[in-house]
Image (cartoon, rainbow, N blue to C red; front, side, top):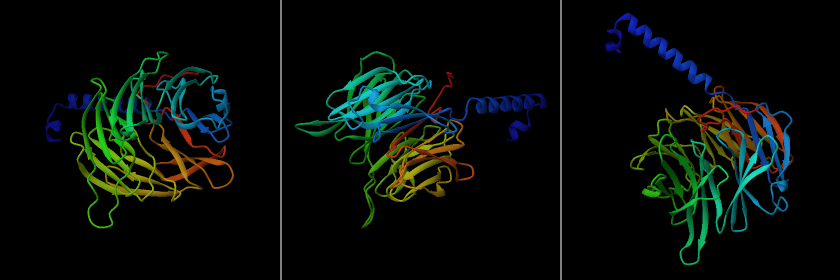
Length: 366
């Protein structure tokens, strides 16, 4: 700080002006969510809301070239980076299917069939031109195998496959500024992939539990810190968020959140994570920088999915009460409380936002 104070007043004033302009630009480029999509495969409904969760447009899932709502299992639902469409990932028997559905009218504009593999994870890359799909295939000789598919988001059917796990893939996280992808394999192994070279760089088993009675991790989800130096592994069985060094994949620290943790979403700035615990019927807010639990919020039923808007102010949590319709909760992350709830169809399992915490560029469509 001393060196900066020693600079001429005009230079300091210029630095402050540039800082204020940069802050204003950052704020203006981080708008609140505009679209919220909810999928309820049990009722065959796919719903599109505005950010206020007002009356939705409804599309029948059986209109998405599916022979009845029970013929396929929903694997994931996510928006494309431009918000003009959503990607619906489905499993039908041993076959995976990715549909690109236009937001404006619900028309399926493209589909990719992945023969012989059930989809376990999907991610649209930051460039908006490609996506990564993980499937699990049964090898007659070796058993379940995790395979990574690199797909274009355009109409091309060409895709490249890469065997990445001796067992299935449970979760993945993408380093947006580079070509690295991180996977959590069944059996608690974390793998780093170079997408440009299409090769495995390293893999590291998570450290076995220490002491009698300690539980293995059983990774349920992955995330990355805002500066890309830390990989967060959410442990379903042991109930911890593990901090792993991105370069070595070695352990750095951990935060206890409770067993049964299922989904992790973090704010764009990387300071806060929202974690679902369906069996405990709560979501946990974790201060990632201070490495402590900031708040626990009880939910009216198990939370099935969570997403955070690009502005980092609110989280949207999808819950499935034991009886009656589901609920979409809006959580004010600054206040640490639920500020609104909206009924959604019973059996709703997936929720997607646009723009969300992973949306890199805002391209507004009407």
